[in-house]
Amino acid sequence: MDESNKIPVEEGNNISFNFNNNDNNLAKVCFYSFDDKIIFENQYPLNNSIEDVLKDFRLKNNDQENSIYIFYVKNNESQINLIDEKKLISDYITHLHDTLLLMEQGMINNSYNTTTICSNKYLKIYVKEKQLFNVPSNIEQYIVINTQLIGKPAINELKYYVYNKNEKNLKIVELSMEQFNLIQINFFSRKTVYCNAKNYLFIYEGNNNELNNNNVNYVNNYSKFFSINLKNNEITLISPNFPQRFLHSMIFIPKEYIFIIGGKNTKEVLYYIIKEDNNNFEMYPHLLPFELLEPSLITIDNKFLYAFENSTFNLNIIKTNFISQSSFEIIKLKNSNLIIINQKFFGVVKHKNSILFLGGQMIEQDNYLSKTCFEFNYTSEKLKQGQRKFVALDFFEKTFIPLGDDEYIQISEFLNKSDYIPIISIFQGNLIKSEKTVSKTLTNGTKNCFASIHTTNIKIHSPDTFTSLVGSSSVEFAVPLYNNFKK
Image 1 (tube, rainbow, N blue to C red):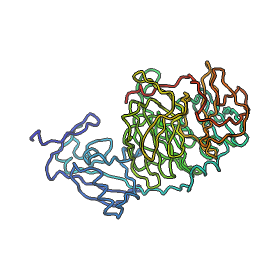
Image 2: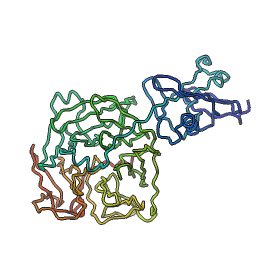
Image 3: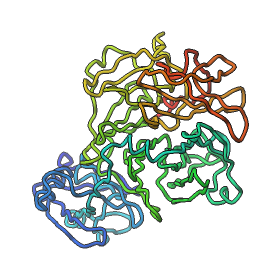
Image 4: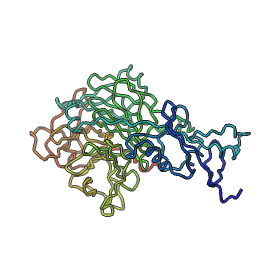
């Protein structure tokens, strides 16, 4: 066989093989429902893209607008993966972990008979209809009306904070032994990812189980996903078997969706539908264009979901229309060469036509250190350095929660010596003076933010309106620099 006419093939289980590259080198692609009923089949050249195959399927099924189906392949009987439309048919046919090759008869003494393989190239694609999202006409107003309690897990504790926006007080709730036995985690950590939704905390355990205590590799592909009812403190273990995630983020999209985006070594986007007895996740029909680590998430105009991430050097901005479930669009800044973007892992809040970056870290680059926060105008797609002074606050939940009247809230924690103190940060974008009240000040001089004392019931007063997020002094505290992780 002429070596120049061979197509290289990925190795699987230490076995490799080659296909002949000729006009008859076709693969049979079959589309099945999840109950294994055949829907459509056809033959295609191995070097055809999956995208072309799916277009053909949609055309044959009168779905030219790409708005009905989601496509998967199975790794094994228990694991499915969203298909990558940018790959070739041969990428799936030749990868032993991603395909269903009918080639058992070609296996002889742990080697494959090439002739048999070429006559049995077969790709099985599973098809699922998309679910239509039930989204209110005004997402922010829905959250304001349906949210009284806002929570945050306490770092290095099995406790969590609950802020009552009506009574303006903050309390600390400790997990009982029964609750500990249910969720089986040692404490809430910096890897604990959560979001608020209708007086519940939804928590997605963050795992990075690449090595055990003896530095030996092992496989643990699952994370716990659970909820805390902030009204009655009831904990529900939704599932112990969600996909393992590390450095991901979550956002609530009313009325009933929790989106899980980002994480190390994954481009899949998951979402969970909030309903009784639901212990399964769903997969968004499109992959991220690249890996995102701890992205900042926000919804705009009741249909767009934006993600911001710059864990390495560049600021990545992508968006999707979650109503039509469009593929992710990469936003190219119109003025990307004008600004050094050194604010990372920030919280986000909408103000007029801009998305404001609040808190996070400012990383020194080439002797340049910004003193004010950045703003992204999503209409002009330009970034600018704003007037709001930067304060280093670590927001685990990146999205500020609307309180009404152009007010937004988030809870963070300040490391004071060896102890964490909760801080309530309220952003007021309307610049209208509120009723003057007493505002607490931390011992290091940080003003216009709330600090708690160690009691089980902490009274919180409403602050003066402020243009910066929290005062003018920087708060120093330890946040892992995740941009040091290798991708």
